[in-house]
Image 1: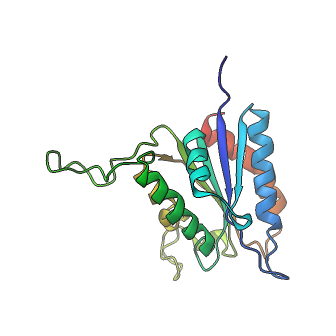
Image 2: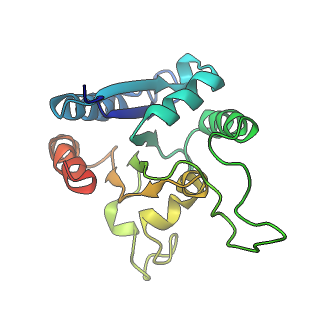
Length: 200
């Protein structure tokens, strides 16, 4: 019997009453869930705000072929609960030597820093929701990001996964969410992006 492929969807949204209730991020999670179920994947899910067990999260990562981080960008980063999640989960993965055993270097083999991960063959992607407009990225004339792309700005989210051996695939974003009228279109186009980057 062929074992089902699995995807882990991680929702980092942190609720702020009467300001940020998480509706858009929940909608992207639902779109991803429907897409992967249509491709016969088993969907694993964690909403960090609802609580989690670090050991169970390690196991979810080990089972998953694909991990997708769904996040709002609060002050240009994921909500603080995500950093806590990474620290706790990845420390367990290091301690039990399932994510990695070292950083890839040794006295015998200097190697390359960040080449010691065990999560080889797994794919990681970020789906972000931004107040920033799309035009703010990849444009050297823009004073804030000075030519940086979303891929550049997501390095603090992707590096832990790359360090542990995951392949990073192109991110997907919904921009200018408080002013733009493109959110329905962003949601509609999301499955096409997932199909392209994961070859499904």
